[in-house]
Image (cartoon, rainbow, N blue to C red; front, side, top):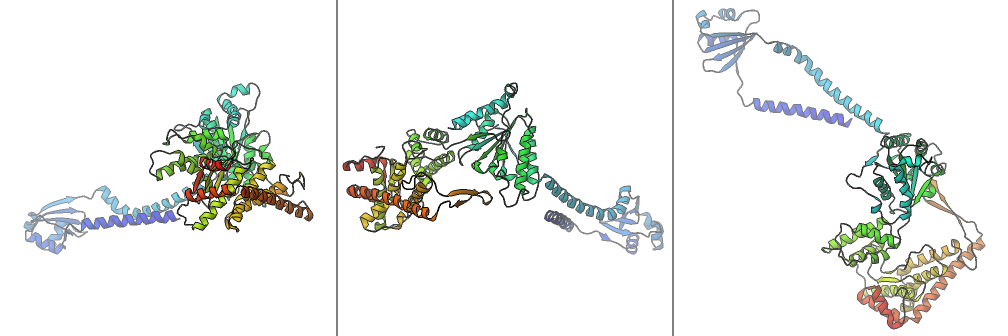
Length: 611
């Protein structure tokens, strides 16, 4: 309705503007003189009239001074008879040039039809505007159930498996999908049925969408992309309609790949919601299941779906014949991170002596997206400092920025706080350097980053998928090293150790309740954890042990913390001079790199791990 009123307003303003322009131009020319019959008779008698043109009842009079005047004659009488009756002599009439014009046909009909048709046309125009708006609204209603599917043909930028670093096993699983799309006869002749659905599972940022695009690029087929959240709408039936439309579009373009991102938006387990089995999301899921079953054996459409929550998907979605092929994408290891760094280093001005291997060592647990962000932050940091190329230091700084946040050098702290922070971080570093199961120290800093007043960066020598009890105990001692250092040095503790204490308590409780590493309680777990799907990611823990066991758990958690405290205290008391040296260097330089830290400990005969 707002568009209708807008069009009417524009039409009204246009008519007003046209009228204004006509009146403006018309005001510049003098209006012609209008004469009555008696005045015209006087002028004819006086010889002032040169020519009179008769057009029906209208008289166009041309005077001797070449001016034009208008008049009207009597309807019933003729021109000559009228002026004779007004006393004009025949000789005077003979001096006037007389011309008679018959009105044309179009003028006649225009004079009749325009006054009648003009209002009808104006009303019809406004009705046409209204009906056009109504038609567009109806078209939107009919297209509401169509999917917002997007097509990528890779004409400009083609993504292949070479552009995906790491993920070797995932690429091997998907090679046969590429082979089927290129040469389906080889499979069909053997009676093989290619999987209709492939589920890509992995943490966020591991490249699920990228590898799906690479499959389409290797196969050289159209790639249709849609997010599962676009299927779900408030109105019942819209999601199912959009699902049918998306699959129909992909089938028409076969061979093709239909990629559904974040399928857990509609693929959550049915029957676990508060709305029963009749809500819009479940109808959309049912339609996806039906469409997957509707593929013919020779249909060359592969449905790829991505999720980082495979545990909540409906079992019907994962049964054979649907998404029965599952490809797991893990976080990249050291070699894969180095390859990913090389890919994202393309197109960036980087100094030749940069060692990306060292950057990869400092990024355990980073996903491909994290590494891409790291390289971008390094380029931004170099540009901010007006550099022409990205250096190794820029890359290291970007790692710390991604992990902890930006540096806060402008944060004003007192000399006392700086000293406490230095001894706190020195306690962490010294404890880690003195324990053989600890990870190597790469950097110690008292420069504030994010919410941390300082930080000690320790990174593993190699990729670790399993951790032992001794490694956990070492981690606990290292977490408490800062707290112990403050207490022994200043005879008091600060709030700077609150985060360390929280992490240490959580780790000790996991050792007892989840990992079964308590010697007193033995190899068993406590507490049954269930995820309530209908509440999103709400987790409820059922207490499946007695109050007596709960007290024993608390005692064991306290025991783990106490042992870690004792270990850290013993090491710091033994190497108090080394602690003072590290803290003094931090107060003076604020940051110690791995080489500086190792050389600082040599006089005290402490050899850190990895040195």
